[in-house]
Length: 373
Image (cartoon, rainbow, N blue to C red; front, side, top):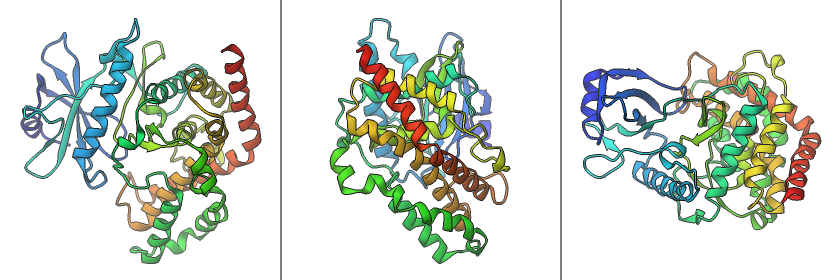
């Protein structure tokens, strides 16, 4: 953990009024390090200070430019609503004293600061249908408000982030190099992944790329990236590091990945993993309520493939990192990434078996939305 002295030096570069003695670690993210700091002014917003993992996000300037453009667009949309409150419904980055929205310290680490939204909460595991419904509304509204923004104007901060063919090539390369000789112990997982690789390349098929529009997408829609208010109502979408050009099904699928699973994404006993279909139905209903206005038929058809792809791809990513020696995701113990990969493969297997039923749910909510509108 950072020392109060270090945090004082870093915070001094931002236009803020922090009580450095309030410093504490915050959140459960896999990539960046986040700290909570109180505002000396009790009437003002508290702060989150975040160290950006520049080994993953190699161009912090472009990443920040993406975030600022998306934030400004969202704030303009929220401000147009009669009851809209941009500072509470959209995250706010704190400008540095040099005019930038990030700071590089003497060690080469990059930092940013944003307002902490009081009286909000997140969940790593969805507990109620209302929470799932509100999560669907949050990400559906997020996509809808950005649907008129030109997606191709955003930088690709992580090239081929959701390109499964690229992810599979990275896994193949990891197996070939195999720095810790781990690949021999994961043959069953590698064979399972290979068996579905062609089918999971759906979004790289020329006919799908011709039919599906590119949108501004979040690309990391796990449920704990939605802030809910004290009444479990969606308030704000956070963690905008990966906002880029993408397909709406990627966001839908990643959200379902964390909502429908009855266990955490790193469940050790995969026999305990089950599908919470009522939560899936609730999320899909909330999502369609907000996104139904702009989605075209090809996008709606693709949603179920996003539901299948994202746990499959996440398993590929976890397994690749495991073989490479755990250089990307934070781990808490040896073989943590392997445990994560096995849990995601089990989730994918169960989703695949229920594909037709789940797709029927999606189209049922589409028909219900269109009949009312």
